[in-house]
Length: 143
Length: 447
Image 1 (cartoon, rainbow over the protein chains, first blue to last red):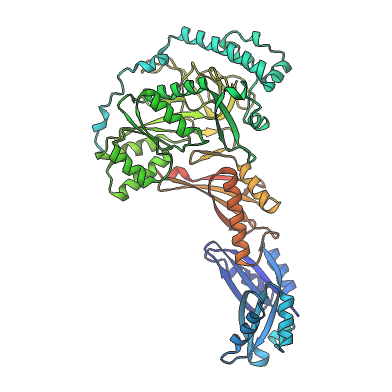
Image 2 (cartoon, one colour):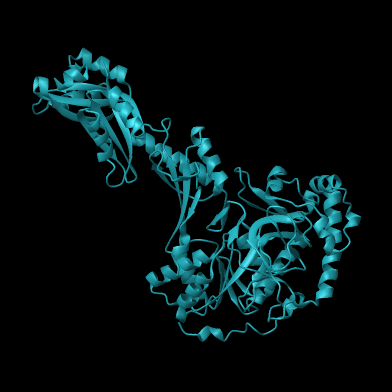
């Protein structure tokens, strides 16, 4: 159960982040969660959108470099130790996290953590075996 | 800065300079005699020359005087590439005592070679250049050109030794050490690229070394184009006389020509390297005074004769004789080229080499732009690359890996480390749909 993440390449200079967000806004697309990874020279804006296909289209039309990636969103208990126990489980099973970022999971009053794994199949198997809830769609994410 | 170093022996006649003052008729006779020998050598030993001359029906015996040179076909940098590595040698390998090389357009270097006698000719050419700059026995010459395959270091080295000067073979880089040796050894002359010397000036300031207190009085600067503004800057800030020297490895290396103390154009050592100016479009020879492409012929180089070599450097021959009395004609300082080659830190680079490097990384050619800048006298090359969908990896590590690969690929081909900037699609300005490949911002640094 993967959800689609939209990544946008940005040069690292002032004013670069607002442009893609405005493009999405004008198309009536909502950003469910996002993260920004940056270096001195460039950045990657990663977005989970309520409509990734339309989002991808409008961003491309506006001249942005866009990449769609499958990510896995996991429900994490909104209590001390919630994050740590999920990460320890992954670590214990030698599943490598490439990056991750968190959001509020409204439906369950919990946290939703978006992961990109080096081996998503292995990660999914371990999470499922350990009864960790994988969020199946962006509708569920934002319900 | 004071004029304490103006009282040099620049205008005293050095006997090694005698060939610079040959009477015109005698010079012509010598040129014709040497040309006959070099054409016959090239025709009989180098396939390229035989084929080209046969194709237009010119026999070696048709070339009688230097005026017949214009009947000969041109040679090009691509010929050196096509006959890589040894295909243009006119003597057996056992007679070749030295090989030099510079970076080529496709990653393969341009190879040049010398017999024992060629090295003597080169050394004497460099010696005469240094003598024209007022150097002689008793001078301490610091050679800060790179030693190795590049002709700069060894060329200046043997020239200064032949002159009887004391040579300090530091090679390039390590600016702190250069300055320490310059001070401690009492260097009187330095050979390097002009931009590197500007860097030395700035570094000296940081280290608290004052040029005013050093015996340095002459700089012999070449391997890249520079300006009158830079000469004035160097004079103001280091109190030395800066001489522009010209050369290219295909012809011999440094030592094809140099400014005399008048600093009004560069005297070409015409008894060794014959100079023509041609229309870069048609190849038609142009009269003295008209601007065009510099074409050089080696009159005394036997391992690898170059006949009518198209340098792509744009200049003109100064028709008036020089008040220094040399009969050698002068060319104007070279400011631009007829192709897209640029020179950075003394290294010739073609945009096509950067393209080759980019292609070898991803298999496709993204839009790119080369931006040249100068910081504290040091030239820097930045390559901006427009990211394409195939290149965009979504992870920082993936993108950093891409930058590393591009940087490595460029360094492997041109031997210069470039700063790689990944930029968004369609951000590099295109004019008429075509991107401007090179933006040179280096002029503004020194004024």
